[in-house]
Length: 415
Image (cartoon, rainbow, N blue to C red; front, side, top):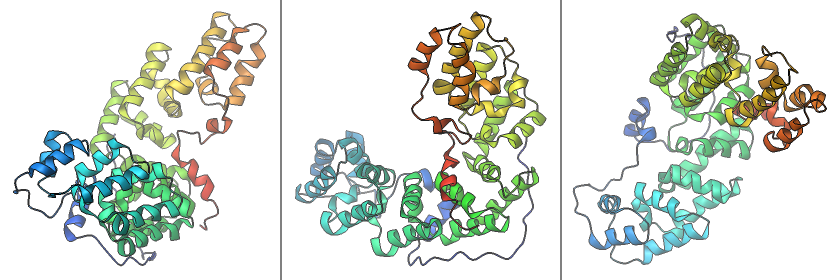
């Protein structure tokens, strides 16, 4: 199946405005266009032609945990003769729960942070995230993911960018969710990408709560040129998805996640299992999640159903929702129950896959365990050893693997 190419739909732009007083450099905007910067390590303004400094190299190795190669590379960007300043920076991170592995990653990416003022420059930024509901372990992960955040102005960049999301989501907690998902999003001009693409979604009739769900689950989906994003919206609409339904934004996520190469590899996987292009297209319209999961998960799940259970690949194509459940947490444990029932002739070998693997935990236990506990008492052991009963909500229609559960908690947002 080839990704459909839609036509741009010209319409008045709904204005989403927030006060951002700082924007990234033109260079930053350029590498956003091709997405290379989003995955590259940060750079500094000091020329890399400078020779490594012995004391700095030694400090980076012995105190920061960098390898000799990484320390030599980092020392081209930062020099110091005394350990006093870097020691105070390390002490700040250590006192707030950053592990040595985490600080090592931070200084490998941004060695210049070792010369920052810990009390005036670094601590206020850490405290800001904490004041908005992020835990210290969360903050450590945010900084490790994007240590250059600590080089940006708190007043002119971090706070306005955070408030952009808070104003839209109406919650500090939800805004922090966005930052935890993709902390680099705070570094860029949100008007150019996020606001424009939010406007496009609203134009297409996507409810605000669903936009919030997409934003909190995959903020990077918004970091694309607005004209390309509109093409994606047209593609999804032309495939038959209703913009007012959650499936529409899930389909957007599927198209945006991993890019064209990932999409094509997943298409190839399904074809290797015998699915036709039409079967893949229909499967995607039924359950766009089938194109979101990793290639390894798709392969492992298909292998289990076809080779372990002996089911026809085409039967999975007709029920692509079966790709969604966790192989280890649901499919294998429930199949162990089914095997007991099959061995005793209590159920037919052509049992419904949907009834077994898509039902809630309460329904599954009632239908396949409770009613047979006298004929097959060993099921009770399986129940305690393999079935996880402590969180029934995880097995609802929007189960724990579906990040869009979060959208159900933002229904208070006006659409």
